[in-house]
Structure formats: C-alpha cells, structure tokens
Image 1: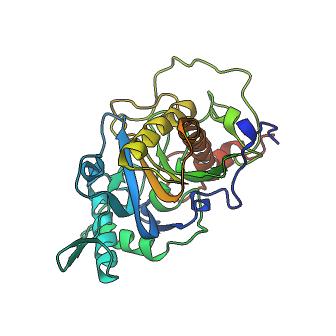
Image 2: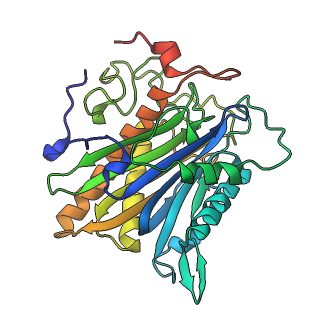
Length: 339
C-alpha cells in the first residue's frame, strides 16, 4: 500500500469519484462490438464551466461558448466521447433528451440545452467500425439516462476502447476534499499517445500523488528507463479528455484557470503529453455551492485539480479490463501480480 498522504491534510471523498462534488452525476454507455462509448456529466441545475486545450489535435463541440466573454454563462451537461469526429454526435443525443425534459438556455419560449463535448480517437482499436448509422447519438442519450452518483471505471463509457502507448487506457475518476472543506474531483478518458507507466514495468508516473492503493499502491519506480525514448503508439490515434469539478463558487474565467492548472496533472501522469497528435483537453465545472475566501483557497483548488487528474489517469489504466479483439494488453493482464 502506498503510504503517500495528501498534502496539507486533505483526503479523498467518500466515493473517490468526481460525484463527491455534491449535485453532480455521471453516466456511461458502451458498445462492446464497436469498442467505443460515451460519458456524460450533468447536474440537476445548470452549472458554470470553462475549458482549456493543450493538445494539437482537438475535436470539440460548443467549447467557444465557454469563453468568459460569451453570452451563455452556464451549461447543462458535459460529454466525453470516443469516435473521433463521429463522436461529437453524442452531444446531440444528450441535448435532445435534455430538451425533452425541459432543460436548456431560455430564448423566449424556446429551450436550448448547452452541451459542450470533446472526443478522442478510437477508430483503430480492433472494434467493428462498419456501422451504417452513427451510434453516438444513441450512446449519448443512454449515458445521460444512466447518470448517477456512483458509476463504473475502466473499460467503460468514453474509455471503452481507449489505448495508451503500451497498455489499454480507460475511464478514471477520483476526488479530494481540501482542509477548507471544498471538494475537487476529476473524470478522465485516457487514450494517450504517451505512456502512463514507467518503461515496461507496473509503476505509474502518477505514483507520488496516489492516495491509499487507488491504483495498486506500488509506489514510485526506482528506474525510470529511457525517458527520451520516442512514443510507440501510432500518431493521430490519441487524445486524453477530462473534466475537473468543484463545489467552489467560480465564474467562467476562474473555471478556465482551474482547467489550465489541471493540465499539470496530465503532464505528471502521461509521458509525453500535449503532443501535436493528441487533442488533450480539460473542462472545468463549478456547482457554486461554497464560497472562496481569498486567493490562497483558489490556489489550492488548482493544485488539487492537477493532482486529482494525475491520480484519475493512473486509475483509468489500472482499472481497464481485457476484451475480445484488443490490440493492447491491460495493466491487470501484464502486471496483475505486481506488488
């Protein structure tokens, strides 16, 4: 078990999921034959959101609305999806279902659900991509219908067919409760060009930030191998997409800053990250339930978001499970007896 403890007296939330941020719910939908899926984060009421992109090949929908100078200041849901550009249609399924429920930005008598979306590339992972009808609208609606405070991780949702340089990727989530009482959580679909583990061993780059044994408790590697070795995954088939969330009261500019800070966690957990072939992106969400008292608490939110994202990335890879037709092994298959 890893003896690493959280800095400044914080702790993981009771579920150790992003839904430890009260009011948030997450749902997953997967298609095992296609090896893909979608993940939705929503809440009972609209919430403030921001975004920051550091990868060179992003695929997005409605992210321009998240700039601080835009008219719309809150969103109804955030979507992470597989499928490359096809996967952007997952947001259509979510928007349609939200509209039927009376949710959305009011424009006169009309309601327009605001559903930003980011996608990852999973079209070369061994699944059957010969569909005649784009499946992502259906997957988005199914993921929204499945939203709850408790949800599964690993090879599910947007992480169903995700891959890293050396192992299967997946869906990961963690949480962190600051001494101030604010909660921060992360949700991530890991499909990186880079690697989450050191060399060919079981140890995760994110090991210094692990809480308890949430991804095996193996601690840090003693030999980092050749950190200058080029990535082995095929270029153009990557991207890590994430959401960090908090109950702190943030406006859009502060959410954007939180998303920016969270990218540090991606760089700590994936080597390399933010490459020209990755579409690495982080959304940030605020429910606004707790006020902030000064810049020190805002600083700690960013630090917590970065450490949460690093932990969630490792947890995603650690929890991935094998399936027929996989092109890469899972961590559990290769290192299941580690430690």
